[in-house]
Image (cartoon, rainbow, N blue to C red; front, top):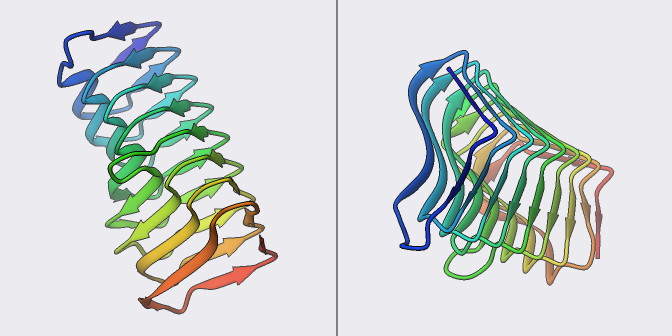
Length: 193
């Protein structure tokens, strides 16, 4: 299915703006969703493209459970709990997304939970409580992501064999933190101050 050029706006604090459940070969493009509890919910999807969307001013910007998918050129701003979350999935590519000003209760800019083999490349993550938060996620690769002015730039609570290359974690209150439940993660060419 294709969801394209949709504008949703709830002034009544509705539950979900854009939803795509249990599908494959889907496209969600050039759409705007704001003021919902969850602005965009994609659940149990395969081979889905989420591109050039704007989600803002909700509790959760994007809540995603997907595999073999592309999340590119999205703007995820001013959500209270989470900007962009992949709460289960594998083999996804997140590239060139702008994740800015997601703070409040939680305030996760980009959160990975229960995920594997995802690639996060060239994302701009600014002014969130947590820039990138990783929990129970293994074998993910993060390359050239810019984490600026967050409370925590990169926070890895638990995970194995994740690779972090070219992480630019400047001007965060805490730059890069690995909790005790992490092992065999690699960190290369990383800048933190």
